[in-house]
Image 1 (spheres, rainbow, N blue to C red):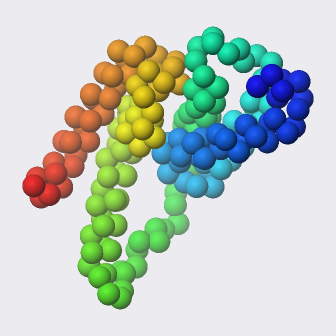
Image 2 (tube, helix red, strand yellow):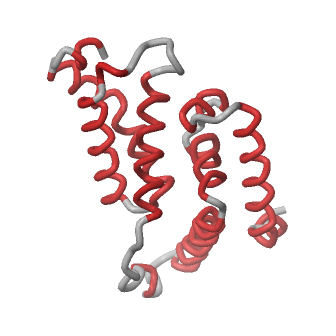
Amino acid sequence: MQGVAGGDAGAFRRLIKRHRNRAMRVAFAILRDAAEAEDIVQEAFVRVWARAAQWRAGEGGSFAAWLTRITVNLAIDLRRRPRPAPLGEKDDFPATGPGSDQVVAGRQIGARIRAAMAALPERQRTAFALCQIERMHNAEAARSLGISLGALELLLVRARKSMRRQLADLIEGSR
């Protein structure tokens, strides 16, 4: 980060290479759209470049936590903007070929899980995505979101309870 703050483009490229995939997964977990996630990650790195001198090692966590916080905030801001209605889903057409029943069932389960996540309040969905999908440690996720560890854990408890309630029939069917 010192190199980036000094305008070292090579250091910035290395930083992007090291952290881009994680930032993409975080943005995608919130937005559920690859193109929008890519735009958010690009904007996050633009902000890192512009504000590199403001970041201080040891003050509020790692660079990864700082980048995650920037990414989460940008993704949430984008989700809050009004969007046009989608034209249609690619899953509107039945699957064909061998094992198509399993493919369709898998798509339906995936759609249910995505819908259950989408129904979570924004903060719960973000906390859940960071800890359950990204496998971020709770302390790091709390720093990334700018909240206490206890507040994060409460968000996770509520998110898991809501997900279990919404997906109860799937959970019971798998036992």
